[in-house]
Amino acid sequence: MPPKYKKPKTLTEGSSSNNFHKLLQLKNHILADGATGTNLFEMGLETGNPPEPWNLFHKEKIRSLHQGFVNAGSDLFLTNSFGGTAFRLKLHNHENKVFELNKASASIAREVADNAERLIVVAGSMGPTGEMIEPHGLMTSKDAATAFKAQAEGLVEGGVDVLWLETMYSMEELEAALDAIKDFGLPICATMSFDTAGKTMMGITPKNLAIKSQGLELAGFCANCGVGAADLIATINGITQNVDSETVVIAKANCGIPEFHHGKIRYSGTENLMAKYVKIAMNSGAKIIGGCCGTTFNHIKAMRKAMDNHKVGSAPTLNQIETIVGPLSKGSKAILKDDDSILTRQRRSRRVRI
Image (cartoon, rainbow, N blue to C red; front, side):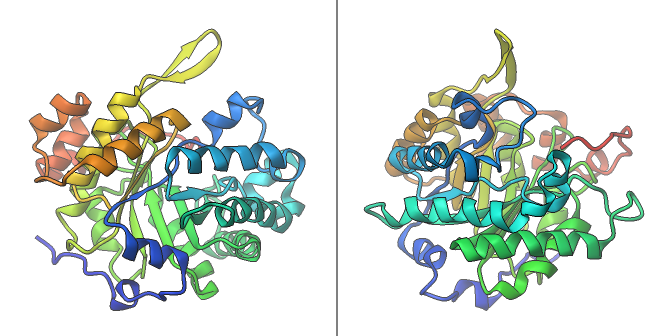
């Protein structure tokens, strides 16, 4: 077995003046927010339209989104800037507004956090470009770095506490992003999206991520989106088995499985399920826990109660995970069994869909 990842001292000692580091020192576990898109759809965002322009034209609704999570109990929430690179904004003819849209997203979030009666951390959401880096695609690492740096400039100017790379699937793109934003002087967190095969779209397994993260100076990392509670718990355990106990592990699972109801997508996860997920995620070693697609304010409220009343126990077994939060995929079972023979098998070709 490869040596366990050890977090650099600069991360554990971080600047006490940064809100993110302050929160880590104050709390044993941190509750993040839930879904951005799911909740904005309920506020009127139409499917296919980007949410980022709402930072300029529907500021009150974005403010309401963040305030809803604060009221529900979140300690940390993400800005409305997931698709804020020029590559993503170009799809909607907004590529010339990268700085403006990202700064606006951070400014709205900063205002909500600063008006709260407790310490709230603002995380600058940075999603993948949607492009593939050479040789798998046409984008160069330099192109990716340029795009992420431009996005980060707006987020930093708007006042985020931490830069938060999320739903990544390629180590090449993640490394390009980290290289581009490392000099802003803020903590950086990164989460990758793993699927039911137990790896990202580009074949990265949780163990791969733990090993490859050595030396990247991440303030926290692990997984978000891609799968529901049970499979994400398996991913967490695949990470925590290969890192030391002080590593800040992040978990943001989807709220169940997406289903169509009367022409709208609804997620199957109940408030009770997400409360159970929080407890078992804590037992699995996660430090920052939230929800992704489908997670509403009511889910977060239930998760807050669960987190506050749970005493951390031992890491769950495969059977315990399935009993508590539902069935596991074949890939997730392989993660828990540390079975690389299944995880490294050649998978069928898949097209990128972000």
